[in-house]
Image (cartoon, rainbow, N blue to C red; front, side, top):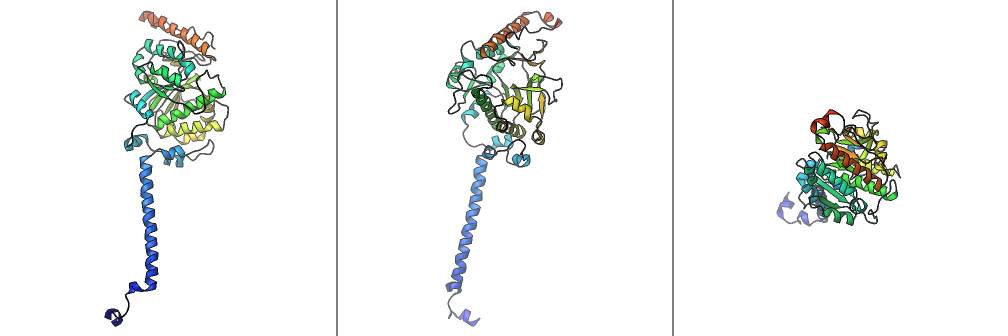
Length: 367
């Protein structure tokens, strides 16, 4: 004790052992500080960009781990609440087109389908002559697959337009059924619709070869994530053996639907050369769909019919689809006839319209 108090010896801090000890502790402290700083940085980065974890995730049909996938997905309401960055172009146009419940009507078009007197004109005319459908036009978002289609959309000042181009791919011409360009176009659409869901918006997707004659909302099923029209309907909306048609569906934005669209898009790799609804028919029975809890229903062709299975009574029809019909000119011909059928029906006295079923004169060339 005397040596320590008397000051005749060196301070402990001056000894070589203490210097070595001090150096090691400094290194440890620096490493610990760096780890904490890195953790804070990563936490900040993930909260600023909450969707990047989903974007980088991948999973294949038959090899799924839904619990881990769900852990990487954020509730869309939380995503919206956390946003601090400026809106993207897509978010801007979705916000402008959306209804109060964040639902948007979406169609995709290329130059061939927007040419004068083509499908686009017939599609828009159906909204103007339909029963209370004209107000829906302000909620229609046209996704243009080439510059010509985008320019023609902009000419319709009451529509919302979004340019969706694909580098190295020209979608401007008529894409023949099941051609390479057709398949690329179809799958580009599925991937885009996933993005819409991920952005937090519900959508009604409608092919442009679908005529809108009545508002469909009263006929959609509540508490359903994914509901889709059919080529052939077997009288049970829950029956997975119904033949779905990807040209018309109503999808709500939530983790289940986002996971499902990612699963659907990835499934194309397992089924090369197949279109979206063929792949949908293959994956709708997959255990993954049940595991994520996706609620799926099929829409009755009596309300949402088409040339494959026309609705039986114009008193109830909401939409008419030129499905089971190959060739742009054939579609235009029969859709124009369907427009005429509707006009004649609406010109009848109300009691005559209800006294007996009013049916279509189509398909004529199609079918």
